[in-house]
Length: 124
Image (cartoon, rainbow, N blue to C red; front, side, top):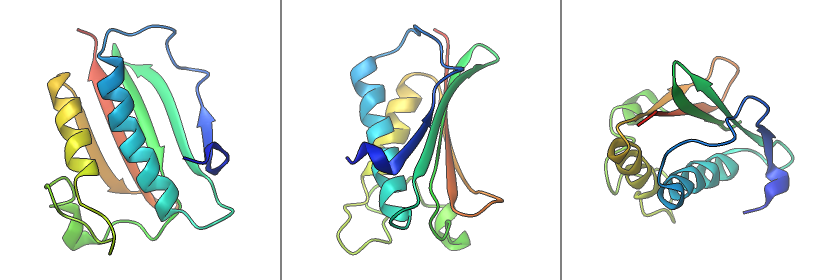
């Protein structure tokens, strides 16, 4: 993944948090790849990490066209994709990893344009 296509904000991120780092890395990689693919060239996706109410929260936002309303309900279903070359497994896998940590993964159209994904994992 081209790191220059992602603007990171990690100032509020905790130094340590109890989680399965490899699995959460996979979930974040899936979200970031989607965000980079959805964002126009020259416009970076954004990602941030912070703690909220004793949970670790990652927010990933793209600058693409957003999520069509008819897709929002099934976006996390396996094999659901709007891309001609996608497998439709990235978001389903990410959601399953987050659920295994007792957390939530939500998607929404961002008021400023594009789509926003919020991954929240409670402290174990």
